[in-house]
Length: 207
Image (cartoon, rainbow, N blue to C red; front, side):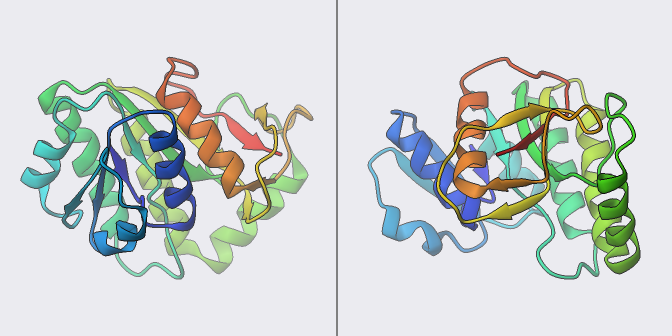
C-alpha cells in the first residue's frame, strides 16, 4: 500500500514493487497520474487524506504501508501531518503493523551526533520554511509514537540521477552524506518493504 505514489519518487517506487512481483495499491487524490503505468497488479484508490474511513479500509490487510508524503512548496496548513496521523492510527485499529515513512534530514534522532553541516541545513529550514519544518516534525512524532513496526527514512537533498548504492547511518559519524537520488531512495524503500530491518529506527540514506 503506497501513499504519495504519484510523486517523482513514488512513481519509481511503484514501478520497483511491481517489478518484484508485488500487488500494489496506490491511494491518491489524482490517481490518473498513475494510469500510464497500467498493470494487472496495480490498483488505485481515489481519495484524500481526510477520508479516515476510506484510509482505514485501504490499509486493512496490507503487508506494508509506505508513505512518501511530504511538504511540496510552502506549507500553510497541517494537511499532510493530519493525513499521516489518520494513516498510522487506522493501521493500529485494523492491526496492520509495518509502516515505512520518509522525513527530511532536519528531523533529529537521538543516534545523531553533532554535525555542523546538518545543523546549518536544519536552521535554514526552520527560518525559511518554518511551517514546513513543523509539519515534518509533527509527522515524525506521530509515526514514532505508535506501536507499529515503523521505519522513518530521513533524506537530505533529492536529485534525479540514476540508481546507485546507498549509505545508511546517522549524522555526525561520517557515515552518510546529504544527497540521494530518487531512484536510490525508491530501491531502498522497496528493500525495506520486504524486510524487518530498521524497525523503530530513523536512519539516514545517501549516495
